[in-house]
Image 1 (spheres, rainbow, N blue to C red):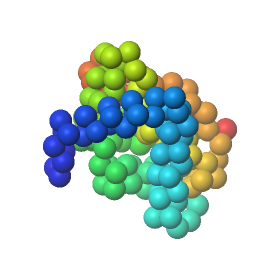
Image 2: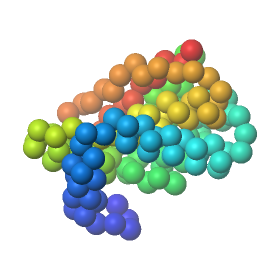
Image 3: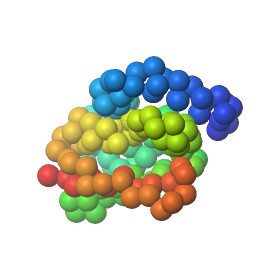
Length: 143
């Protein structure tokens, strides 16, 4: 992270999740909804296809800056967000080691953004992890 100490962010994320442990799923959705609304306000219009993918990638990577690298790829009815160097994951690893729930707001951010900006429905197909903390591929099916 450029502007924030990663140890601070990891501890902050842990504290926020632990202090909201009973409402983690609601909190995750609320954060995702808020970020999707910010993304919609930034784009100002309905976007489709590659234009949507580039705009979401720009928002996630340059606005939220939650990771070192992010790629949004779409082909047909499939859309994926490929993440590398995620800063959220390190806090989630601490939470998991303590038996606490993890919180990744990027998954609902993608779902809500697809709905609100591209005007399509989507469902989560899964999150693929390759074993490296901070790397994953979030996969959606567009309806």
